[in-house]
Image 1 (cartoon, rainbow, N blue to C red):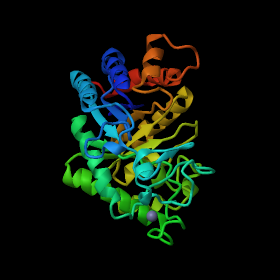
Image 2: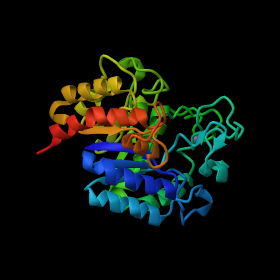
Image 3: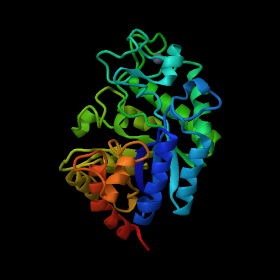
Image 4: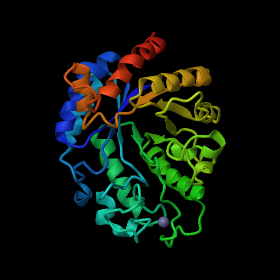
Length: 329
Ligand SMILES: [Zn+2]
């Protein structure tokens, strides 16, 4: 698999993504797109959780473009963590404060990175599964990306349900709940960011790209058919999590960002270390804009130097042709 991750937050973003697919990603040989939608979809089941104008028609246009090029389209909803950004608390915890893992932290989020929902709240999955179902339908998807990166608030003292429990057990329960719905009930595949499943102490990674908050043991408690997107954005001599996941039976998509040298190191290390277990790459588009508009402009040569998406474009141009040649017939 050769994938590109982009935010998809509006109908206008969907139009940008269709152009990006038709002009570049399809012809260049991308076979997977992960569209990070979160609460920007017009959810019929929970209209109060809809913060954007992305609707089923716009999702369908993206799905049509992917079909034209044989690309697999996978919607993403950040689960468990990333329920806020800076001072903004996103729709789920804004509308359902009872699901909040840290209800005592004010809603403008002073001194925290991102809020989390409580994996033990008895009603949260019912709501979230409705959203997953609508995205799977709207995007005509056969896989779903649950996010789950950078979950720092877990097993909080502020949560009467989670207080005193082991973070790894709670994280694994969340993964297994979402897997039971997605894979068990819906029959689609499940993708997840890998960082909370990596023991940062054993592998000498930092606290963002690996776990220093006792969630890593969850890796031993979850199904092996989950596809792990193992992101690392810095240049390193080795990326030991990649063979670790692969040897344990998971498929691994290594996920670089916008630094060409670091991306070369990560992808090269993965190809060498994984050997026959090599699953592929998911390029991330964190600064590529809504629908990858910044990436589209950069690939067209319309972006100013250093604009959002130029790094992602440089990484694609440097690495994609070789991957396609290696994967080709
Ligand atoms: Zn809780």
